[in-house]
Length: 372
Image 1 (tube, rainbow, N blue to C red):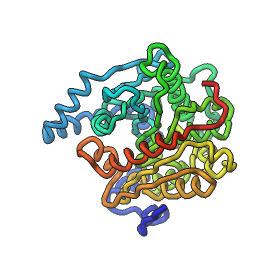
Image 2 (cartoon, one colour; image 1 turned 45 degrees about the vertical axis):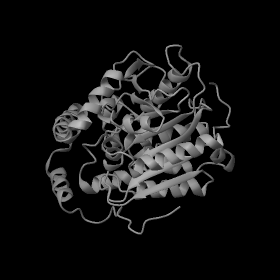
Image 3 (cartoon, rainbow, N blue to C red; image 1 turned 180 degrees about the horizontal axis):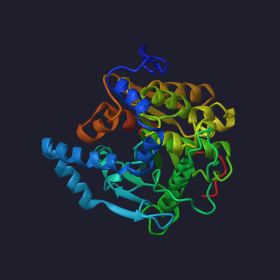
Image 4 (tube, helix red, strand yellow; image 1 turned 90 degrees about the horizontal axis):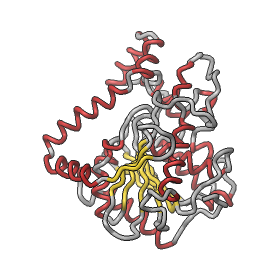
């Protein structure tokens, strides 16, 4: 594993620049107001993305045309519970038996929509891969569902009841239900074909995917149906240690408006929801049963510093997991997905293509018992 020399994840350094302003604002604005913004106004983040997408389309008309073309050709299927959030947007490359990349979008656990990541399909389709972008419940849109795991009502002494609005366990469930639909439901184009399946995600989406895989492999209650057809995982700019990243968010003064803390159950539950911690619990047999991981992160990422990925990859590899890494210089948090969306034959695209081709040739799959 090649490790960059620069380690920017200095959570104890005083904030500078814009971070110093958000830190000061956190000290002035009442805590109740910050949490109210988190719980009731996350849709403003999606609206801001919509506005920036319009501006981006004006500056890059070719990308706009590709986006509109993908919108016309997309196939949308609903899965799981009767909810408008539970759907998968399929973009097929036209190649029979093509591998399927199941992609979880980012959005800090409380925002984001599949259409925002639609353009990644162009690069992956060009490489002979189908893409399924998963719509899933985000924080505040996730009602308590009978039979699912709910967070403890007491978090960390702060008496923040809003966490019951949604929890990462629900999001992991959504991913599992989507995979079950894609592989088993007669409505799915893949129910009759044993195509290779890869998981991928950006930011919080990478966290959800890796949490799903590690919980499945460790045999956590309710997580024992890992499909054999999952051949690998690609994490882009992911969060893998929630506790460490919470420290970083707190230093910047954004931890109370971010969906991460509440959606991951508060301080008392951060470690159980951190793939880095779970990787340290793997036995050699379990680590060998995991599909291979490709961890991609920009070295200049100031939203989720790349050392969060670095420590996770090192911990997973140290316990016997199969890990490849790509540390990309002069790339920020959105750069990993922007490279796929806006550029032809980007470094990110090449890393993903080589990783998936290697996994397919070896035929790596999960060897644990599966109900699917």
